[in-house]
Amino acid sequence: METVDKTHYKALVARLPQLRSEIGKVIIGQQEAISEVLIALLAGGHCLLEGVPGLAKTLMVKTMSDALAMRFKRIQFTPDLMPGDIVGTEILEDDHETGRKVFVFNQGPIFANVVLADEINRTPPKTQAAMLEAMQEYRVTYGGNDYPLPKPFLIIATQNPIEQAGTYPLPEAQLDRFLLYIKLSYPAEQEELTVLKSTTGTDRPQLQTVLSDQDIIDLQRLTRQVHISDDLLVSINRLVRATRPDGTPSAFVKQWSQWGAGPRAGQALVLCAKARAVLNERFSVIPDDIHTLAYPVLRHRIALNFRADAEGITNDHVIRQLLTEVKIG
Image (cartoon, rainbow, N blue to C red; front, side):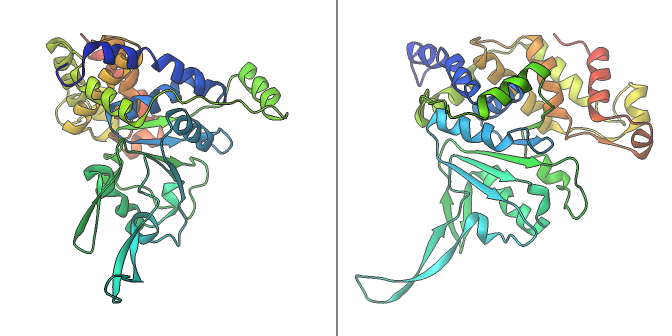
């Protein structure tokens, strides 16, 4: 912890429970999904959010942005959306000093701290690809010039798992750019009853700003410094390699998997485990961090074959089986 003193770090970490509390004023339930989105933010990655309509995906992201006082933009992906609608375009303007016409780059909605790419699978691959450089390089290139994106920067893309007709499934290269693949489920009965009571009246909760942009940047720096033992690193490496049908002794994987996760999955699992430790006010990774995050880290990095589809085997089934076969820690 050389760049920011320990006292400052501890003060920032102590505010993380308050951040979750502020988000919980608006979002009832979905605590696991909220934690995973915050983990992606602390780890400096992006996440893919999947859930049926009406589960407050957009509200969750907007609420988190408000509690962090971060600039929020929402992009509704449609079949006619063009790359320029995302990254921006050049417009012709008058130069008031010279009187000549000049092209000026007009920034698109990607220039925000938190970008919600709503229903990303409803736009063609050409437009989906426009986000790749931004997600990986944290910059936009237009007309030979580089335009850095603001920091911190988080893209949260959503998908509707029900209506697949006329959609454009994300290619594997773009899926791998997402640090986490988060699945939202229906709320529990009592949680849904609380939603009905709290959202159909006149009361609107007032959110307090908990952390600033610079605070998040400092926490991202702290996340990289969290301790992880060599034994846990070896376990993560074995787990990722076990997802590959040509490099695993697991008959389960060989039977149902077409191809497995690459080295980026191991990097993602280490970073996310560190981020979860910070979120839980710890400064070292424990096996439970890895067990919990193996699902959102690996589920979009494993491709199952036709036999698995026919037998109803999902990626989560494969991950669950691997966690019983590969000892963590």
